[in-house]
Amino acid sequence: MAYPLSDDALAWQRKARAFTDQELLPFEETAEFNEGELPPDVYARHRRIALQLGIPLMDAPLAHGGLALPLLTQTAVWEQLGRVTNALCWCMSEAQAWMFEACSPDQLERYVLPMMRGERRECYAITEAEGGSDNASIRTTARREDGRYLISGEKWFVTSANKADFFFVQAVVQGEGAADGEQHALFFVDKDSPGIMMLDNPLFGHTYSSHHPTYGLHEVPVPLANRIGTPGAGMEYTRSWFRRERLMIAARCCGAAARLIDLASEFAQKRVVSGQPIAQYQMIQAMLADSITELWAARLMTYEAAAMQDRGEPVALIHTHCAMAKLYASEMANRVADRVVQIFGGRGYMRSNPAQRFFRELRVDRIWEGTSEIQRIIIARSLLKRGVAGLIGG
Image (cartoon, rainbow, N blue to C red; front, side, top):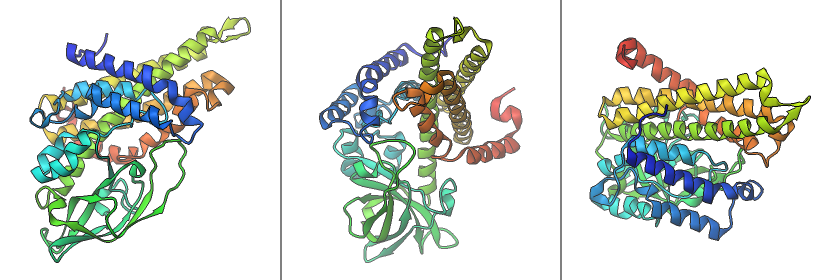
């Protein structure tokens, strides 16, 4: 029995599945053996189709030309997009609802609405050498001087920066607000601003066309009008971003696991060893059974975390459930990928096999947007505060 989705959500799910299967999957190996890159005309077509389908508009409000889809529907879409390797689904930007709550009309016109239309690309400059999962320890500073902010610091793992033309930068504002004279804030920073330098562009275990460079910022001048939202609310906007990203990571992990299980099931029924398909061997059956059971649990958890937001449940509770979904789904997908590589045997270690690519790529989902350990801390603190019934009912 499937999780109950509306007719509209099912229609979106089918559209996302068709886009993934017909447009993205055929180019996985092209990307894999070309440093993640696709021919420009193919990449442009993927972007155009994503825009035509309305994927970048899913979370944006109706008043600004968005679709304001329920989060459960969006989760079902991103689950299907997660079925492709090499991050080929990252062909478009997506405007998130929190941006329309936090940004001024001027900021929406200059940054967010052009991003929705595919005219601008964003990246998030939050992580630092000593401020990764613990974003409260960020050391990048913003100093107000002569009618502007001067931002200085170093940002690591700025995903998709090579494709972006502006950053969302998190910094600590000096000299105003909090009792200690410091507070967190988000800023729009144009990538071509003076004082920005790429310090490193390290290679990673996956082959994505979206890179994760390190940037140095030295007294980068930023207009006062580019500070996002009200003073003191910067961390709340970052948490809004984290909630959505963690949920969509969970969704993509479910999509990846579903494809892996399909691949392994098909192979196991065709691969003959000692006169019978390996699907008849109980140890193979056990791996398949564990995989589908864990996927079912992860999908239920992920969908319910999305549905909680659609129902308007308390933000603190949603925050914890998004952490639970990311924790379980990301670790589930890693276990499934490991089993599927084992089922394929030597074939599973070939880069031409999606199982090998998923095995390599899914590992980072236990790290970025908050490590598994950070998710466990969030969950445990919520449990100690609310108890079992307060956290999951019963």
